[in-house]
Length: 236
Image 1: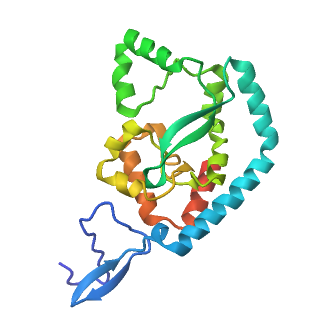
Image 2: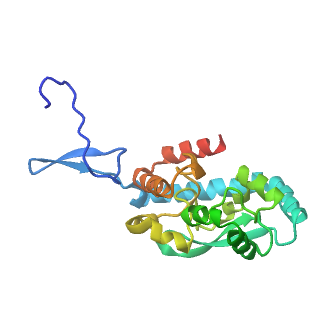
């Protein structure tokens, strides 16, 4: 089949492996693929953590006036605390509280249960992605915060504390572990991120399986330049 062609591209049937920076190696007369697992190498991991620390600290300082403005807006929008900490699973399966500006009304769980009981047509939407496009729990200021992703700015403190990274897989809750299946082991080897490949690749317009595949692709193909690209795409 290769006769007469100057260049031949061989695509192996090996989904879910590294595809950037792969090098070929001769192994006993056979072709081998060497895949650089950069996030699992000590040097690149230290570089990523150092950038996270410096950039998150700088971000907190520069954005402090915006933090104050948003805190006042959340306080005036409805009763309840300014910040909300949701239990998430991070590196090595450790549990932490991912901080957000509160975007929901108090007693949100009860309101959700009542809403799904009276609107069963939205039950499948919730069970599929744990999200609702028309969420009755979200406050007026909360919708604006979520649209611009400003509700996640407090997670800069999670990054500073080493619980999260600026860029990485989406932090997940316990109910989502089952959906990651065999890929949860890979997910739990890195820090989850404030932003990531999924967030700039369609976000809520993607299926959950696509989201997991994007997280897997990011972990296998990470580089400093990939992080810089995703941060720029996030701002855009």
